Amino acid sequence: MSESVDAPGLSDLPLEDLVACHECDLLMRKPQLAHGEKALCPRCGYELYAHRHNVVQRSLALVIAALLLYIPANFLPIMQLNILGQSSQDTVWSGVLGLFNTDMKGVSIVVFLCSMAIPLVKLLCQLFVLLTIRFNVGRSYGLLLYRIYHHLKDWGMLEVYLMGVLVAIVKLADMAAITVGLGLVCFIGLLLVQVWLEVVMSPHQIWQALSGEDAHAGD
Image (tube, helix red, strand yellow):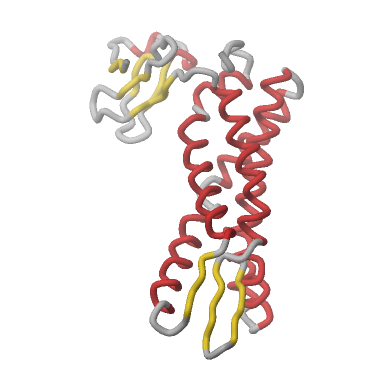
């Protein structure tokens, strides 16, 4: 169920009762949502926020799944190349090392940060934020970590790295025998789990739970 919201006389309302659309900047009264409902902007139709079921438990399950996929996705072979009788196996980590050892240190650092370091830090931030809500401890640290997560959100670029791998496979297909490795399967799985996590982990409910406004965020 969805609900469009708008209201006159907003100047008389306290700030905590107001919400602004991220797309068109329309200011409106914040609605109270039941489970499964979502609030839509009456001007542009953008989803302001939603009230989803079992946000904390579902998000925790997805974070743990992503962390389990992280190591095989980065350290197991993505593909094996066979050219003129010579074979080589490539992983995300070996790609970073290869760039570093060929005097492309700047590029290797960017690849390492965007494809390995920042995605891991994001997952760890999400994990600790969810644990602070689940066990009701260290909410102030949870707020700090969730802010850090939002600052890092646009810097984890797994989809860009995956696109580069797929382009390389297409270009090399006529020159070498290519065998897709388990690492690529885990990498795609990690990317899909993170996308699913972005959908499930409702920012509105997480902020409310961290600030103590929503004691039933995990319901």
